Amino acid sequence: MKVNKAEFIISAVRPDQYPEDALPEIALAGRSNVGKSSLINRMISRKNLARTSSTPGKTQHLNYYRINDHLYFVDVPGYGYAKVSKTLRAVWGKMIEDYLLNRGPLKLVIQVIDLRHPPSKDDILMYDWLKANGLPVCVVATKADKIPKSRWQKHVKIVKQDLLMRGGDPFVMFSAEEGIGKDELWEIIGRYAGE
Ligand code: GDP
Image (cartoon, rainbow, N blue to C red):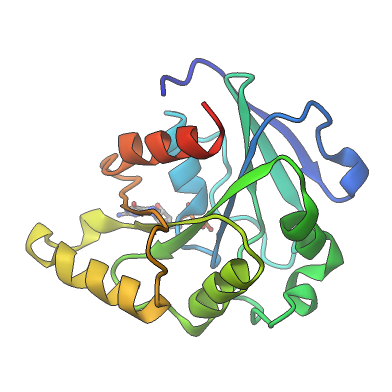
């Protein structure tokens, strides 16, 4: 997708601040510092729209970015400075859990992980929680530029195995630095956003 317009809309702290135009929403989740903001910036070809490294502790903010007046990226606060619990409520509070479980326009959760390392315990719990609650998930393994190409497949295999990825869930290898996986991820987003 060619991005002509990308705007920061709101850092929502209450459900009544969520947009009401019913455009499809694509949520991004991942541990702090995994590269979520860099991924958003790369996807929309901006250097700095999504601020890198959100403030730890601000666990209640959902950052909305509207793309081409067509869909939203919703940046969910990073997990990792707190443990992901089975209910998520202990970490993110009720608002985030309710958002993920009940938000009508939410079409896909992109779970961002680091391709260099095996998924953390929190990554695994997060994936299990999303799947247990019937959410469509795309796993994106980022920072691919940090490992040699010859080892990519080995790392991909470990990630998929450790997460016990269910057949059919999309997986994308990505690099915000080099743009690897950008077109593939847009293609997947398009499918889930109902294009
Ligand atoms: P966030 O906390 O998940 O939003 O993470 P950031 O986007 O702020 O990224 C954390 C750090 O990882 C920053 O120093 C980024 O420059 C770096 N980073 C993010 N994505 C990539 C990538 O694909 N390749 C490389 N080499 N570094 C990355």
